[in-house]
Length: 380
Image (tube, rainbow, N blue to C red; front, side):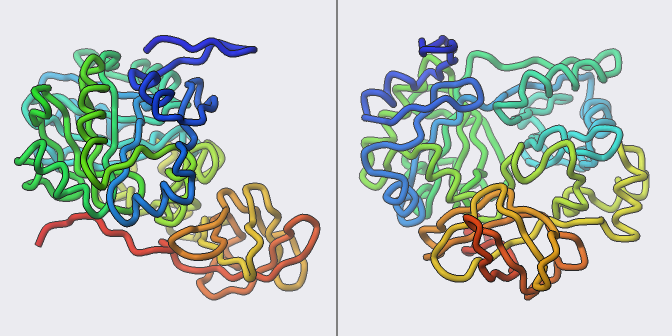
């Protein structure tokens, strides 16, 4: 990936680093990489552009790997031993969201798992940038004989997101039109073989495209030349995923939160609950049966002051009941939004709560997420 010199430390760079600089990006350290937080269009402009047209994101800092075994059943079982996901039922090219768990049911990371579209016995994994070294070590250390984790180091990852993404990308890879949300395929893009998934983290339709590192700049430039596509930085990526009600690992979920607390029980399907053979199963199943002590909820502050991460949450009678884990202004929503954890007794939609913002008590309410409608392409 290469490195960029800074005053205190050596930051890694993605294959698109020079392009970001050329485009006038403001670069910041993120998960050990020198990454674009915004471009001259600005966070608000980039956010709105993605919601209205199409935005191109560099997510090459994420970890990509192949989990390779003799057949699908065996490889799926190996990953099911570390997560609560159901991978045995995946069809070729189908994607699942899951979480790596520790023995207490805490979340080590969240990740996307795709059954390889062509290679039998292979799963394609995409994990978070800040966790990839630990994730890969944890998975590798817990694999049975005959199964191997192969980190991918020669590919970049870009995401094209927004309501126009489908029509735009179809011109580059016509077969992409056949994909629906959470499906993937190997497609030729500008002469390069790319792993294309119809997914993303903005709440919009779009694609994540794993491209050969040597071709990343060529493909990105080609996409950016299309009318309607703009480069988008980490700032807008954060406001987009918050509006969509999506978790950011290390903030909204971590090793101290279980899937039951994190409102991720949809990622613990019926078969796995019945088998109860994943890490932390007893704790998580007890929380499903008896209720988790706290829950991740959507929060709507009154007024215009945003409630940032770490903001104390109180009940209407002044008792501390939790804290905000993500918060800010939602450009598409048109006001401040947040998510965080509250004691389960206060987690019901419509519950009045109080946020302590800069020392002042401000009224707020527990609300349903997402804050803006998700517009994934699910087909007919």
